[in-house]
Image (spheres, rainbow, N blue to C red):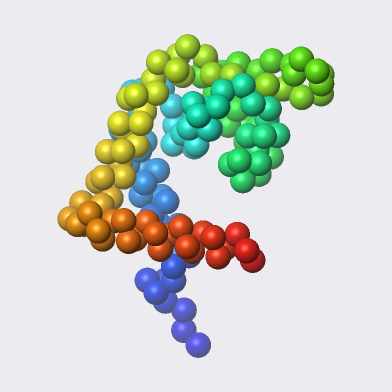
Length: 143
């Protein structure tokens, strides 16, 4: 039995993720964040002041990966960690003014990276592909 990577949705999805990351990296380098930090920024822009555990649950990444990402973001002045007011074992993650100031430009950069990947697609093709990807992700979450 042969395995063709060009016929594998999982392989192609991985390649797509790499291409989006590269495209976002090119557009975000001068803004002060990396593609790996973008999901954290998105979560915090939609609801700042959550615990590291809440962030971990929302992003569905490994604990060590998130811890390393947050350490770099803190070092780069994008977040601040504070002890939770009612549970000293928890930390609350808050965006800094620097991170809040870059929001519009970061979203523009991500939109441009997405648009570059969809060059030549008609609107309905793009919407259909996104719907298929969502269905695949829903299926993957059930396994």
